[in-house]
Amino acid sequence: MSDLISSAAPPYPTAAEKLKFYALWVAAAIALLLLPKFFGSGGSLTTFSLIGISIIFSLSYNMLLGQTGMLSFGHAVYYGLGGFLVIHAINIIGVNKLPIPLPVVPLIGGLTGLLFAVLLGWVSTQRSGTAFAMISLGVAELIASSALILRTFFGGEAGISANRTKLLRVFGWSFGPQIQIYYLVAAWTLIAVIAMYGLTRTPLGRMCNAVRDNPERVQFVGYDPHVVRYLAFCFSGFFAGIAGALAAINFEIANSAYLGAVQSGTVLFATYIGGVGRHHRPLDDASPAAEGWHPHQGSAQLPDRLGADPGNAGGPHPGDRNHRSLHRQPRRRFPYQGIWRLLRRGESVHLGDGGDPADRRLCGGAQNLDLGRACLG
Image (cartoon, rainbow, N blue to C red; front, side):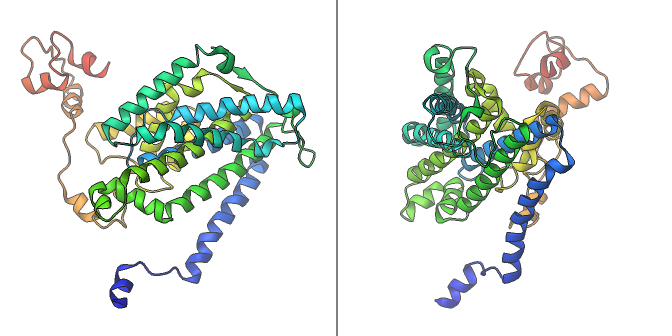
């Protein structure tokens, strides 16, 4: 029996592997500390702060999509609510002179995201797949529309603003200069990334992968897939709330855009393009998602739509078990391949005037429309 267990279980990491693992995190911390020495302008520090916020937000979404297999269209709900509660908390702390420093305020946003994930998650995670996606979209639209109606809390279109410099100073830091905000965001980014990585190595993280791959088998061995999805949903809401809190601290304002569909779509594209197969892959696309992500998103999606191998980082990894079998499979024929072939030859086909029936199906049976304008414009 012991021989069977030793052959099935992965070997314990050696001392060299442990040293390499911890050295990687130490090197990341040193790089974050030294980065302002080389890029000290205000614009660079602001961009780095937005990148750190986007990293936390993308990894929190990857806990749903990549680790547990739940596609959400409303992840901005917990991001935005965390930001709004932090703005209100800063105002309350500043008015009452409470001895609470700014570095611990993001926890308020995280707990807010966790609270609403606990309240909304039990019903949302009853089912996965399309049902969960539609429920998350409905909740997101409900709360986003409420942001323009409940003006007392959300502030309407103008939002709610705050002054982060009125809080208790830490080591003489008022957190007014952008470099101090950068170090605050960098510290929370490192803490959140390590925490989320550690969560993927726990039994809960492994069960999330099992629920993603085969929920029926998970239920057969005695675990409840609904409970596993619910716990993953709560942790994801917690870290999304931290990201929203850091964004609110950085801009000193929270408005309805924090809760909108654009924010949910941004994190969805950043996570998917970066890759959802492994914990670190959303980091690949979190940087361009912070500033000017549209050109990057288009350049990454275009080869996929024209029939190239899917994804720039989300495809089969060389270490995966079925790497060779995946590459032996025939390439999928994407619908846009026919369009690309026609446009490359400079042809303009009118679907209602003798167009090819196969090309007519590309646009869902549209009639009397130019093919290039109907499908690409």
